[in-house]
Amino acid sequence: MSQALNANVPLMGTTLLDPATVGVHYYDSRNLSDYSAHFSPPHMDSGTLTILFRSHDETDGLEVADLETTEKEDSKGVGSEASFIPVPTPGDEMTEVVVFAGTRLQRLLGRDRVRACVHRVRGPGPEGHKRFGVQRLSIAMFCAPSVPAAPPTPLT
Ligand SMILES: O=C(O)CCC(=O)C(=O)O
Ligand SMILES: [Fe+2]
Image (cartoon, rainbow, N blue to C red; front, top):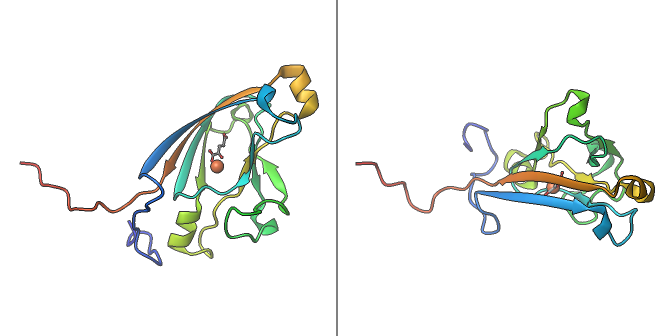
């Protein structure tokens, strides 16, 4: 894969991530300490790709940063100065699957070719909370492919 992508560095495993991890996120605005808070603050994912499945709902608060407005290279403080763009919901004729590049893919291919996507999930805000009491579900597959420790045993 490193060769196919003409990567700067070999695609090696990471001690921090399994090759693929599935995350199921359930957000409930009743659990927010402050109803203006985000369900998920601005961040970049640390794998290569994140494949995100989300529900149909016009209150979905998924937003991506305009990368020209953020120069931060890791998740620390990322998004503090960025402007965010809502990701259209499936009801707007978009697919329900969103794919984000992570910091690992950015390192692998070089920042001039791929930028890790800064994203966040807005909460419903106090008004939205009062009207709907928002619950939100999403499923993410975090991919961080690694080379096997030993060559696979041939099938007999
Ligand atoms: O719930 C979402 O839509 C996004 C979740 C997310 O950004 C993450 O798990 O890294
Ligand atoms: Fe994320």
